[in-house]
Image (cartoon, rainbow, N blue to C red):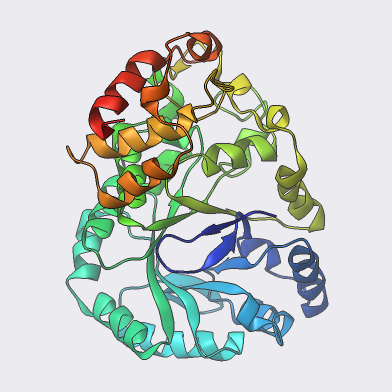
Length: 382
């Protein structure tokens, strides 16, 4: 298992993490067995958005005695009413629901308290100009949540949240199909076949802007919906007309800026194992580019996807990293201190490029890499 820092939180999380939906409607024994399997293979991070009391009690019991070694991301603004999940902005419901969550999980704190599902700008203003953010900040001050997060499917609203400086973690939907789509306040647009009826070219700029902002600001991203509800794993349902493997879609998400972990909604040990296979696969088996090439309606031409196919560089420059750090400076028009230090830490820098062209011949997206190295050299000075 690999571990990454969750932004600036100081927490290291397993890159393969767990969503909670796969543990619903199961016995305590089954939940324990599946969590035991996950933990034995290095997973230390779980998202629990559902307020289902049986689910949370089962997870709490399964983690008893090892809570301190496990990272729990729980959600604010979800309540259990009439035996079903409800998202709410009613602070009078949120307050007791939080206490109930801690009790059911048998813990006195959450590592990440996630403000749940903010996709609309009107909703954003209600949350961040009202009682909910005040409640989250108070819980953080008391140590009852260690870090504040927010979940969203809308890159514009997610960026607004990051720009407040109040959130430490963003839970966001990332996969190669969703990344092509323009922002929307309606999450159903992500799944609508009509969305993919038009040609799409390159990552939507708002999404790319969001990921780069999170990287610059040290806001860790954990990824939801990496499989696109399973559609990307199915040749029949994928908008690309090709089935991807779990390691391929996981690799795509993990190569986006600021991403620390991918939350897998596994429904059994076999699906956990399929996600964990990313840890042992070869670079070729993780290669998502082979799915993204030669498509009629979708393209990423001229755009660095950080896929690493340019390697090996003749003089050992980590080209994908140089491109990423350079791109992080473009939106700012300056070099953020953290980006400068990350670039400085590279063993080889853009100025060492000898313009041999081997990288450009290998690049599947026709990126002008030599020109990019010149621009990076001008920006960073070496």
